[in-house]
Length: 323
Image (cartoon, rainbow, N blue to C red; front, side, top):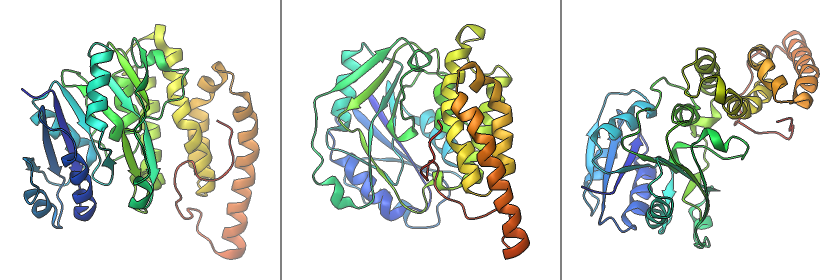
């Protein structure tokens, strides 16, 4: 049985998938297996996979979204651990070795998250050098609430026997949702260095779609309010710390996308949590920004004929920082 299963979901990204697979092929795969789940592509995805020089388990499904594709790969995996890689991202030559070192150092934790390097051109990766392993260990994910940790599926390494799964709804924030559902799994390690993967920034990144982000934010709020995350009342402060850290930026992003109604919705539903955490700067300044945004939208509609739902921009864009 392999130690690691590498799961790569993909949809109509044949050219980028080829680069992702090349970065996986540069690893020592002696104790690993590679699984590609094609989420209903209509391009050359299968041809690219079949042309690889190393063994790949290739599976197709009708279009269901990345969460469902990752879950299918999880079901097919035989390894003790599952590493996820998005088809538009790449690994560094040391990624699998770093994962192995982390597993050994921290006595096989259930959940590991790795750091990433954001890039736009492949040339930017050429100068990246490996650094010694630096990581931090927690009893579980909720215990890490006070540390600001980037959370994304592309940096996740999970024990296959974890019970939670990715949310299959078409939304952003499914990675944060999974992490919260894994909140009490024993052993959580954060790899600060070296970089585990390269996050490719481009126009079709899922994070640029505000509607999908809004659905994801509402899902996180609903899961917490319906007591679906583990930990009960004893661990609630840790959960809402993690949730509001993920919901405050989209609240401001809604204003930049000329969606004041969506912004007020998130603000209203998380107000008590933010107050309990003492986030007074955000609580007091947001209404001023929201009223100004609402006024601007109405003026545009009256005088310029601009629709209230303006152009979408990437999450965390802009300079306003109230988080």
